[in-house]
Image (cartoon, rainbow, N blue to C red; front, side, top):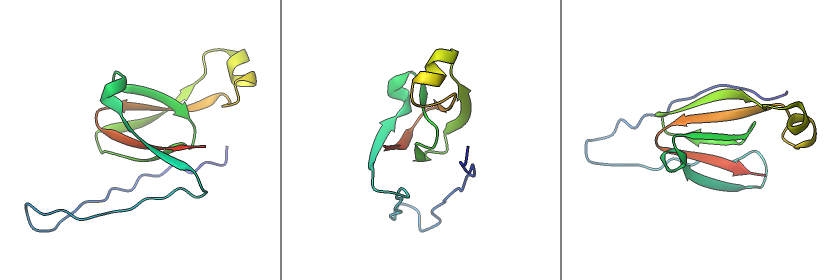
Length: 94
């Protein structure tokens, strides 16, 4: 599908009680939407490639469409991303 799947974990190791900033961007101009996975029953299915980053408590899995007609005519294709867990996920809205 041309998608690359890798995970990178960023850990802040500064003094206790302090914080810092990290920035993420998509590879093309798009809107980045913060979504709390807990607010959707702990399970979100989205278009492949739409996950930008998430909390470590969110698992990313491959999902498949349930019907041939949806996969063929639905526009997203047959392979989707499933997000499960709790915490925030940042999705790229294309």
